[in-house]
Amino acid sequence: MSTEVMDKAPATDEPRLRGRGKPWRERFFELSLWASLAVGVVFLASLLAYVVVEGWPRLDSRIWSNFPDIIDPTNAGAQSAIMGTIWVIGFTALYCLPTGILTAIYLEEYADPNRWWNRAIEINIQNLAAVPSIVYGILGLGIISRGLGFGQTVLTASLTLSLLVLPTVIIAAREAIRAVPQSIRQASLALGATQWQTIWRQVLPAAVPGMATGSILALSRAIGEAAPLLLLGGLTFITFNPTGVQSQFTVLPIQIFNWISQSRAEFTALAAAAIVILLVILLAMNSLAIWLRNHYARRW
Image 1 (tube, rainbow, N blue to C red):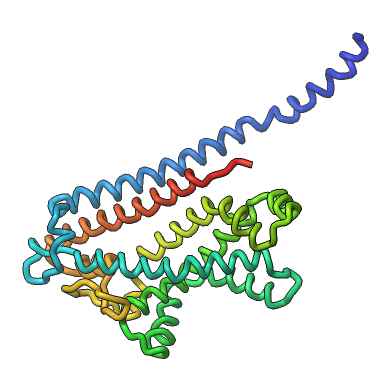
Image 2 (tube, one colour; image 1 turned 120 degrees about the vertical axis):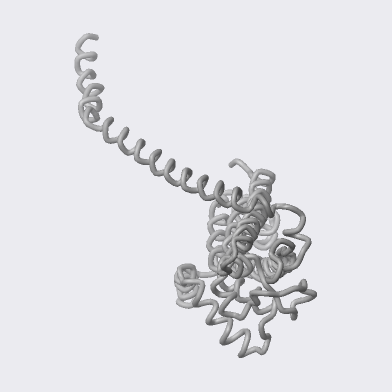
C-alpha cells in the first residue's frame, strides 16, 4: 500500500511544480483584461454623459415633433430625420434579411463545398464584409442611383445599405445554422422528413436566436452610417416626411452631421439631443434581439 502511494506521489506533485511559475502570469493577464474593460467602459460612460448633459435642454417633444429649422434653432426638431431613418432601416431589413438568411441556408445545407463557384461565393462574402462603407456608397451612386435610375430616394438608400450589411447577415446566419447539432438533422431525416422540412421545422427554429442577434447588429451598423448616404445625395435639410420608396429622405446621422457643422451653440445641443434619440433607437433594436434570443433559445 505504501509503495503505491509513493509511486503516485510524484505524479500528483509534478503538475504543481510545473504550474508554480504560471499564477502570476494568469493574474497579470486577468488584470490586463479588467483594465482594458474598465478603460472602454469609462470612455463610453463619459461620452454618453457628455451627450446627455449637452442635449438635455432639447430632450423634449420638440425634437421629434418639429421639423428642422435653420433660422430658429430653438424650435427646430428632427421629425423628418427620425421618420426617414425608420423608412430606410425598415426597407433595408426587408431587402437584406430574407436574402441573407436564404443565402446562408443554401451555403450550409445545400451547397457542395467542392464546387468552385460555392468556394468563390464564400470567399467573396468574407471579403465584402471588410469593404469600407464609402465603397458601397460609390456602388450605390453609380449603379443603383444613376444606372438603374432610382435617384436620391429611400429605395436607393435602402438597397445600398442592404448591400453594406448583407455579408454580416449571411455570416451570422451561417454560424447560427452551423451551431445546430447534426444529430437533430439526422433524427428528423430518419423519421421520414424531407430536407426542407428538416430545415424549416428543426434547424431554423433552433437558429433563430443567433440569426436575430446577428441581424439586429447588422442593422445597428446600417442605422449609424452617414458616409454612403451623403455620397448618394441624402439631403441635409428636409422639412417633410417620406411618403414612399420614391421619396427623398434624410436620416439622423446626416441631420446630426448638418447640425454639428453649424457655428451656433443651439445647433450643438440639437445634435446632442438627436444622438440621444439615435441611441434610444439602437437600444430598442438590441433589446428586441436580446428578447428574441432568450425567447427562442434552446439548450442541447
